[in-house]
View 1 (cartoon, helix red, strand yellow):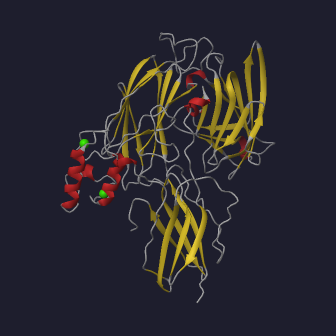
View 2 (spheres, protein in one colour):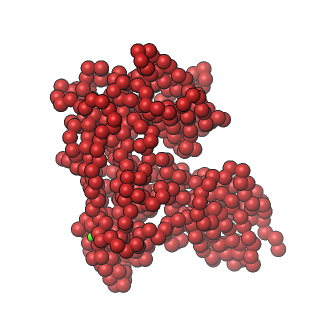
View 3 (cartoon, rainbow, N blue to C red):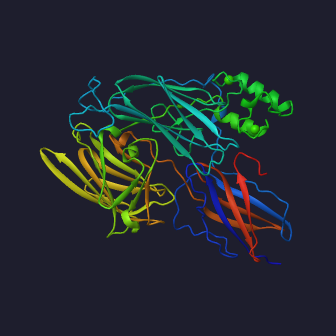
Length: 502
Ligand SMILES: [Ca+2]
Ligand SMILES: [Ca+2]
């Protein structure tokens, strides 16, 4: 008997707050996937087998061989990789170095004569799933802040904190969390913003994580005995605890995925951070600091949140029209960013992150810069229809997840940027912007993490079973397969890369 089954496939993405990016439309018996929109993913195919024993009853599970979760962890040769140390030279190519004085007043907008202070931004992205939240303590010299990564990783995936008002000098950064090795790094701070990005594991798409490469840092999981490094002691203890029956009582740190059991899943997590030989330090990106930028909202624009936070790791800003008009070409929302010391804080590119849930659809970006003694203004249209713009040297790209990247082609003295948003993709009533970066040198920037949508879904029918195949996605923790039969009955099968399907 022929059964009509349609499938939807979604990757459970670790780096995006949205899990509903389905690759296929429900399409009856046709399970082939239009590949017109293929991105080059590299890696082996995903595969799930679904077994149906009798009408409407599921007895089989799912099985997935997904993307490269990889064999890098078990390489012999390096002892405890728990402690990483490296020195970053914060010279961003500027001519002047920060002046030492203390008349700075952070309450007021900066002016040409005001002192600009250094800033350090630290971001952590979640690549593992936990059943309880995990709090990371980020310490810069004497100051500490916390980033808590939640239990439901699909909801919130990257969090940031900012340390600002920093005097020039060398700073010690430490990141620690229960069950993780301490991460330390020394950082030379002048008067720019220094951005460090971390993930709780290795991300796909960054090659071999070689020293000095353009990759995020890695926070290593697997400190079972609590001494803040990962060693053979941790391996021994974890295996003993699993052998002893897996009760977490008294050894909570060994429960690496926080599900109150100590079992093979914890061992799978453990090997992620064990005997790592790659470079785990974050490339340091250099941006114009928040204190060097004056912000202002345009006419009829209501701002929720602090505009100056757009240049920090904390908080986002919501823009709406006064009186509730939608955001259109006739009723846009505009925000202005001024860099009075644009000659000193040269800008090579601008990144505007409006998030995945409601990305900017159309906008105009006016960039005023000084060359010689003349001011020039260029207007850059942002339009989804033509996401790639090449005008003179300027290249605009859209990462497909709400982030617009404007590469100016060279470092110029940007004095003012005016962002006029004329349309949002999903909800035209508001524009939410989580971050704006004025990047000093686009060459020294970590590329956006690769975030795929499952492609090339194929199906093979068996006897009371069918097998699905798809192209493996990079940077996902698992997949959801939504199955619908001819009677409209739906069910979702989870196929995780680490956790057993429960
Ligand atoms: Ca340890
Ligand atoms: Ca566990």
